[in-house]
Length: 211
Ligand SMILES: Nc1nc2c(ncn2[C@@H]2O[C@H](COP(=O)(O)OP(=O)(O)OP(=O)(O)O)[C@@H](O)[C@H]2O)c(=O)[nH]1
Ligand SMILES: [Mg+2]
Image 1 (cartoon, protein in one colour):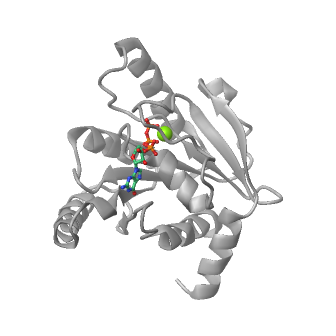
Image 2 (cartoon, rainbow, N blue to C red):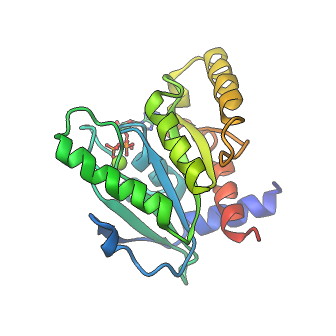
Image 3 (cartoon, rainbow, N blue to C red):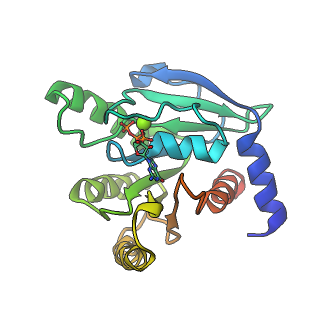
């Protein structure tokens, strides 16, 4: 993608961004009037951190020391007038949470991902140190089933050696190819080095503007 487009994406995502609301249940979601991009993935994978990085904010989305911090769908308005919404999701697979809490999150997360007409793309975050886990595969199958277009986004790329990152990327790419709704472009990102952030911004702009 060209530089002008990348600059347009940067301006949009680092421009006006405001917290809209926190939805503990689907009925609290805003009217589906603008395109949405969701960030999903295991607890502690770096969803809130990536959102902060993309928007150039330090504390827009609360990143956590304790896994399982994000427990609602946190929605952010982007642009003036609003052109898109970013959705920070609760992490799945947080083992220490009580079963009832886990089931509640799962209902909200799956319900949102499956049934949101304005959801343009889901970013499914994968820890670069760990690669794909069964719980990620489960979510991928769910998204395939719902025909929700998604990208795999590796996080914490700064924590692995470049050679290992290459291997993990190759494995993940091969597996992604078997999932019909998974976009072939896979991103490697880091909140420490800024790797992949500009590319991901461009992809988001593309996802909301492409016909
Ligand atoms: N080194 C490094 N650390 C990261 C990166 N991204 C996130 N982290 C750290 O990982 C931890 C979890 O990040 P969060 O952004 O809170 O993760 P989350 O996916 O939002 O977690 P939940 O809301 O609990 O599901 C924090 O300590 C972050 O600082 C990264 O790219 N590199
Ligand atoms: Mg979070």
